[in-house]
Image 1: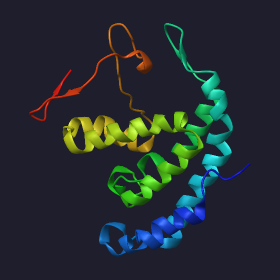
Image 2 (image 1 turned 60 degrees about the horizontal axis):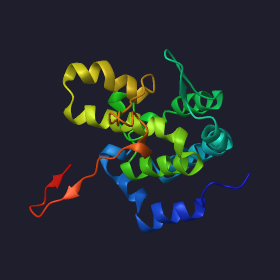
Image 3 (image 1 turned 45 degrees about the vertical axis):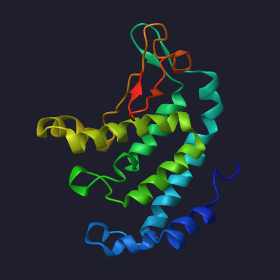
Length: 189
């Protein structure tokens, strides 16, 4: 199976262009090194190629379905997400005190890019979770953080979002609302 992206290009971008290794000089990232970052990227690449990429077409052909009580997904999605969670990737960019890996944001985004390149649909589950966890970290109450943030960083809880209109339900292709720019910089919906 071909690689999902060029690792030499990614390494060039991270280490030569962006000097991601230089971030390890900051106390916040002192636990990391170019070697440890490389190992994280290696693991992400392996999981993405072994568990995310192989079911991309199958998950497109067999979309999630709701039977009125339960949501049904192909089993490969759970297997891929379980491995993602076991590797600690939901917490890649979060503080160690929350159970995260405390990687520089640049590296956490590179990890995400690897999974998106392999299977954007399955990678969307943790993406929504990480986005919701970031929101909670900045704006959540201490009770919300305790109750939801830590389990999300650990991958025990997954976040979600709802985009809906009365005539479309959650079918994004059928949503008709438009945001039209106004002269004063606002938008009319």
